[in-house]
View 1 (tube, rainbow, N blue to C red):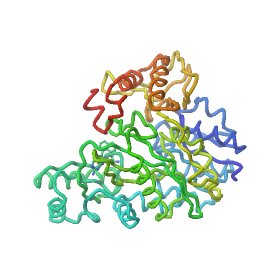
View 2: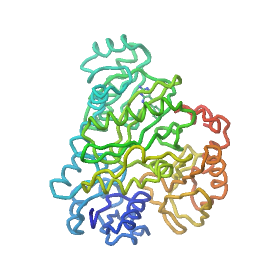
View 3: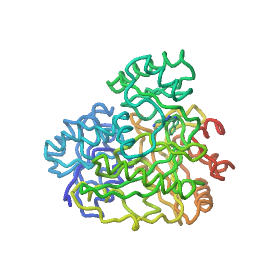
View 4: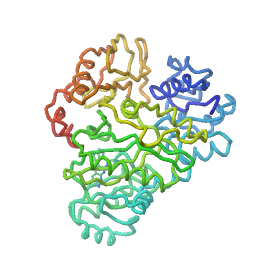
Length: 446
Ligand code: MV4
């Protein structure tokens, strides 16, 4: 196992990683931007280095400075967390060429899965259902029209380098398809330096269900069941839960097995997520792989009892998975809500500033993963996630009651947060009855 690692991230996930390292007796080196200089989680690290200015482009995305800090700090490995460089295969490659282990998948697997057209091909070859669509990249207008004719409108133009909705366009007829092709390609070129696009049948208001997997470097892989992440607004998830409400057991088994097949055939090692869209008939379709630890990983930890950060460290250090599938239980129900420093009453505008007062809920079944405290100043430069409130109870009904009680107790003063919106969700009949899909928030609450 590693003795010393660098955490190339900030905020709650940096603290989350440091905590597991300390439990395992692993020393940590933190890096921070000017804006994060006074963050109190830095004091928990054994050493910390400033790597640059306020913006992520001049700090958390600076590969050269992170590698320098890793060398000065004398670490054996780098944990990238999520976001920033977590899915940058070039960074993973640089780490390994500097003899620093990257706590993530092999860069070749990351590169292949990061390209959606290639990921679709890997899925098809592994007999995992993909959304009907083009086999590869769209070469010209004529090909797009041919594919659309075959699968039927509406169709979705997607960027092969995309994710999170960038470079995505819905087309409902030939005329709009032509303009969607060029605007999606232009947006993708700008955002990802890759103009490649492909076509999929557009599935209206699907559920978003993802499978947590863990794979080692010896060809072993297990799943940690699924998460329902359908409740989102503009591609920002608000609520994540496991088990997915109302999912028939047979479908659940099939989705989890499909995820394992895909992962095993891709040369993947690390924690990872296989994302699916699920339609109202419970047909599921693979869409993409997230080759990183995700924000919502705690709900899977709660029901399985497995520390996913610990497993990432072990797998990256070359250990064999000490888990077999029958040792991965799914006990009870766990729900996470994301607390963001945003003002729901003001178009979710970011609400940075100093936390002047705070009361964090506690008691049975509650976990709060956060780096915030009274006196903490939320910088305006990064993602607005300030904490994750996670409940774990024997049943979904009890989890919902627990969450309502916890949100009621929560006080955060000095800034606006998404807590009032979360309370609306937990008081909504459709949510309580498990009738959720990706259109819920816009349709029911905004
Ligand atoms: C889709 C889709 C409908 N049909 N693909 C959005 C981000 C990217 N990860 C995939 N996304 C979608 N792909 C087809 N063929 C609808 C979405 C989608 C979505 C997916 C998951 C969670 C929230 C979403 C919100 C809007 C659209």
